[in-house]
Length: 338
Image 1 (cartoon, rainbow, N blue to C red):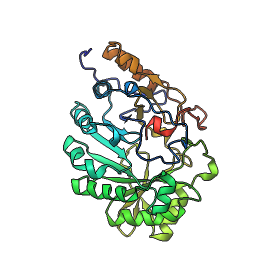
Image 2: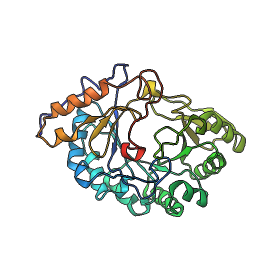
Image 3: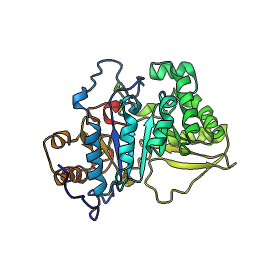
């Protein structure tokens, strides 16, 4: 049922004073590649279509969340572009009062097909995953030979007019070192921002260990040696996950997401919704709040809002725990959402 709109006079604030304005929505747990750090090698159990939230249910959740102060939406997966009719959802969410930004994280394989339609539907920004420019290594990481299609997708996004497209590269020790500089040069030549993300313990194969983390500090050293010196960029008070740096020669900027070596939990403003209808207050949280039963049982907007507030109110200090150690959640990354 549709109640009177809520208002954000009482914003979504957790016990540590963090105001939540960003919502990450996973629209599917399925993907057209199988990255080793995201999807298990075997035993994958995808949710059924009936378990997935419908677009109308997602729209209603966003409407309620916007009434509580959520302003930015990021669509993730799995791979969001494999879900049928995704452009319709983008259009629905972009039209919601209070939502000022709708973005998407994608592996880029289907962008050549969808970039223009996404732009027309109201998508404002794209993040495209690209861990390497080496075809053999790309196949090793993703278990698929699709590098050319990703590069075509990046070109299509640029042609479609996505001017704030970022590239995301996961950094893993003894795998990513030789890719740091080539990826940075690729991004600089196209005036795109590249963000390196430290390897986190949400890998599909459950093989994460701390010694496999290629730290942000080491990445910056590789960039300084291979391209040129960097200097910190102004954050403008933004709670973004990435710490940004400008190249001194004026050749753009690069970001590092130091979730492991220097976590940004103290300024986190994110809430998550999984494709099967669970609200999560942290990527690493072992706890989640089931919203699907409420959406399908005639619950009021106030009841939905109460659940969202409960999830935010229960948010731990850092990394899903109160002691700052990583909580090992029971779901791989493709089931949570990037």
